[in-house]
Length: 254
Length: 254
DNA sequence: CGCTGTCTTGAAACTGCTCAACGCGTGTGG
DNA sequence: CCACACGCGTTGAGCAGTTTCAAGACAGCG
Image 1 (tube, helix red, strand yellow):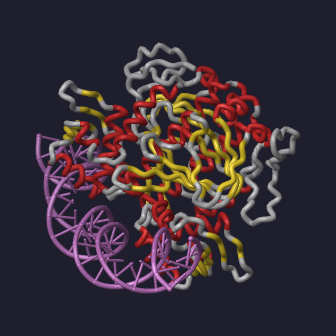
Image 2 (image 1 turned 180 degrees about the vertical axis):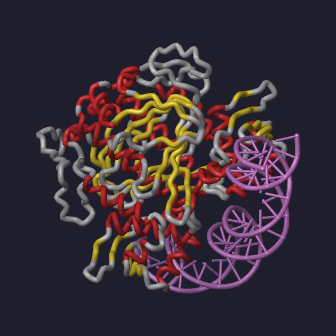
């Protein structure tokens, strides 16, 4: 559907299919080629923070690989990770709430395309593909956020953790022949807790319980293996939704 | 870009110039005129449910007056009100998460414009005003949701209630000379609780405590008066953000 | 080798939830 | 016109799940 155009100005941006040699380089359903002409590519390291705006004007970002995290800190030291952005996701400055000390940072090494929002808006005005790409990406993200909202608002501790693990497993997991699923957990415990609206101690305890039950094991801090995905799914009321969400993603290419 | 000094944010939006002689039909952001050609106007009654899609295809909605609520019910009877949509807000079918029995319903009598999403997408492709309107509306909503996310994830019961009251006061409140603010509370207690991720009992208790402290009074179920807005603001860590959000709203027209 | 940031774990304190009862306004039928 | 049921909101008492605080374990790094 998307073809490579000769529009690259500065550096070659294989914006079509990142011929993923690496597991992470999931193809974002193809980022519209014409965007390339306006993009600056940021290479992120884990933990690196990304300026929300660009030279004082509103910016837009498209994640190409890796992941970003938006978090806010409110008076009183209350911190909440609002959203995680994965390959194909878009973000614009105006998504960040005002007066909430919002920060965007990388949770993983990866690549992020940055634009002036005005440039994106102009391009979108005469390139339906770009317009559609943004609109659909935002819609998909909104739907994902809805599930997350429900999880944070209604689930107990274990359900939230199970939900997050499920998302990771579905999004980036690798299936072993045994039926087990292995994946990375890019967030630190603290960030994970802030994302789930939990206390870090409680989160740790919950993960220990899952480990004790044999469902989960993590060889090291940032890696996890789920013995039985269905058993995990049984722990979260959002299992169906997550499955539907991640099943749909690839076909998002429309 | 049309831009008229906004009065009350959440009152009716004129579709075009329609010199709204009607009761509350005042004009803030102004919905792009050309959308009118594709719109079907739905008149909602409180509690009425609005079909998420239209004749099997994806739909888009723009709230003109009143308010809508999106809620999901997950297995186990867990219910979460995901978002509230106010005049000027947009919604499209794809915002609703899959497999979560999502429902859109009116919390107030009002008017909602309905479109086929495909029609909106086509129009946006050659009308930058429409495209910009949708993109900006979605961005504004996303920012609002971020605050709500932080509230549900991090705030205690009283802070959440104060946050919601603050939103209402800023959005639809009428200032009395005494400094008090009066506003409507369109949601039922149960829905309010589900929106805030609280138990209805707990919510009721919290409101009683606020009433006992003299800050709040409600002459009847759906009306409230805040004696001192600053005192209320002091109760929620999100006060600054809410103020910024609602101060910015009128100028959002850019 | 010791430092530091991160993660884990325990015990006590507390917040919010559950469940059950009651009050109140409204609609319905005798 | 009253009796009654119903939906909705309020309130209390007891309980459960989370948070808090403090201490210990572990890994990476100078």
